[in-house]
Image (tube, rainbow, N blue to C red; front, side, top):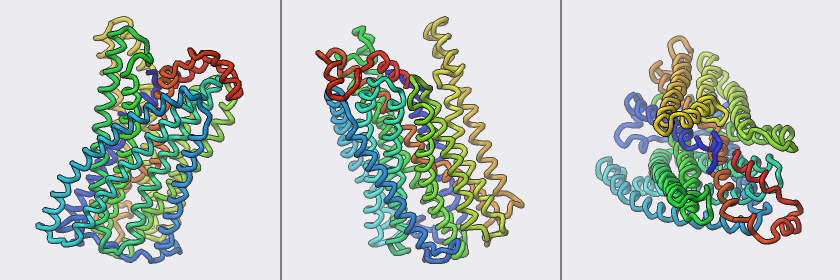
Length: 561
């Protein structure tokens, strides 16, 4: 199946970016436990954390009020996602294409149900460990039940957003294939991105809603057990869905290709049953995996920062200010993602809405950069308003710079990847030339060289951004003047905030990652439907949908994506 650079690289890019972001979060958790001065995170770890009252004034407004506003924003984000889902479902689609997409979804459901059974078996083992540790070793009593309950909630969250993502994508793939028949490229771009934004907004809204609900609706002494259980559950779900999905998609892809080679049939030939498994694998690897992984990473990073603040900041007033600030910034970044999507969509529609052809990568790249810039701007304004008088008076802009290092990484890393994977990149052309001139062996060597070289630049970018955050948090920065926070602890906090900033624009990151499986499936749906071979199809399409299909142009657009 033809893929573009953004789609073709979606799985490794997302996996790599989330790997280092999650690594930073885990580092923050580990070092917090090692350096905690308050004693809250002693035996039992995060399960012993207690939230202070959050009704203190933060930026001239009660912290509780700000968090309730954030909860309302999450509801609005969820409404946007579900409304988009409804609109996608109502888009016109030919019956032959709809049947193929529903077959793909049915296969995806079988995969997810099998994964659900496997997850419950794994959870049973983890539950035994939780009971032994927290009940018999830490003597936490009934709180163990809370940890178990929220581990199920966290696992259900990861699994639920993954299922939602597959359902949206399998609506969008047939609608994209149908829209390509009109011969206008913008609709082929717009539908997959709309489905991706629906998934991204629902994912972040649900995750943030759950965490805010824990902080607002439950007693402070139950926050620790809730958070640790939630983190365990979503981590278990994401690990299983990410790893299994990645393996499944590779096996299905190779199986379909072996059939193609053995029987000398074309790509996505309707006679090849492996193509449906391949389409399911696209969703399992590039939709289920990133969705569950994004849900988990976004959540555990928040838990890590909450743990750090409660364990390392001795002053309760400062704890409240930082806790409320972190979640308000997350809400602001969710709003920034939505506004950036609207702005980018308006620009793209004005620029490409009536053209006959354009580079599909450009509006995707502009969306990421616009989101990054808007997130940085709104983060700066929010931090200045909420923390402008905290510390020595310079803390607000230094925290903004640290978070912005992560937000900038969210835009910079895809650009570096695109330099090595885009169909227009010099490295890709070099690999093609190597295959033509030197055969398979030189082709593989050329690909390995390009891959290693790309890893070098990605590593340099990540180290540079983390180093910048470390320097801002270092000696003489003014950050260490607050309370008894040492410079070492501020450095740990800075690394956590880098991951926090990177994941803040998660709605758009998920949208771009979900773009790939939709467009890849759309091409397969087109071929498997054998729509061109149906009798009187031109007249039927014109009578039912009001346009004359442009078959060659449709194929070209689907392959170009």
